[in-house]
Length: 464
Image (cartoon, rainbow, N blue to C red; front, side):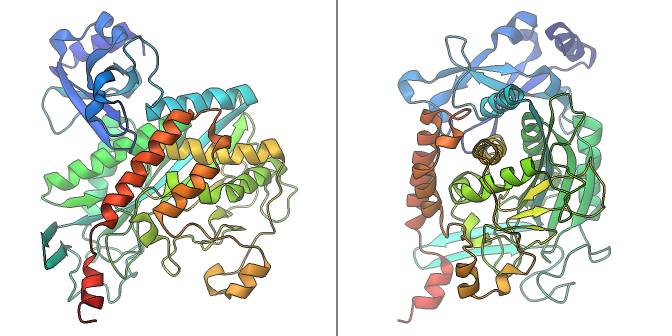
């Protein structure tokens, strides 16, 4: 969309307030709102100097804090909940007019440029899980720490489902969130131009949902991820409910993952480079196998970016469909890397699914990091180990050791240690400054949270 067309569209829609949205280093969507009386072609091209980088997580110190937001015209969308208001996603620029190196979206843009130089085009599909609760109440006192969650579908004493982990594909009247998901899907399609393709109740019995959307380029997929979270939270809030993308909000029930579906195509989009009909196992090309090997090679370091919170590692435990072991397989959901194999001979749909990520991740950084790990496998022509077609959770430790199966990190600190020692493969699109800033930010986050005593520890140890 040309700048002139963008400004004319604002005028024709009667928009009075333009919400400038951008993403910080931690992956949180931020915004500042300007009146359209100051929006014209010149101001859009120049950008809006409204960003205090010192107040944004992971950006600038106080002495160099002035940054600029430049709208991305293609992301313009009328906000259905606020009259005469539209949002537009923005990129971040430095004061001298150069791209800001710690803008997460810039990383995804650089990835696309790097892919094009290699003759590739990536398609990224999203499956995002989340919980919706009636209310969440946190009480913290010196001797009392309580997280109270109320769900319209259940509470701790009764459930319309007989057991935890019994919600998958539930139908009304048990599925109390059917109309909420429909509203989310309709809002995404009508106002934001995002083709939501699949909506359903997830395995978690206490209000867990999943949304799937059509595949797009890495940057577009990151934009869609941020928009989906924004829409889900707003639709829930307007119903007096709370939507959370926290990886593991409930003890004893499934956590929320974010499954990234990936394929590499020829630059003109005519051929799926991951597809090989002569491969009897999974119709997977040698290029795709090298890509899988790169994910296994760097999977432990990847965890710091795709599973970036202390809570992420409460999800990554056996028994809840969350991957723990760095293996690959056809159709096997206990593997970290799965090759969906629903229909034979489906070139368009041939892809790999990377299952460790969760929706607390920064989507631009996570997508870029996953693809860069795979590209490193292609560059080095790495070969993956044999696929594992068994339930890895039921294998003995000795069996896993004999097969050389590696385990994902058990904590955020361990994952950050891995990233610190293994990140050269990110360098074509991640700067060293961004990587170190990210590691420092996450180490401080882990340090602060580790100072708190979890309620479960009080219950377990108070009488020792």
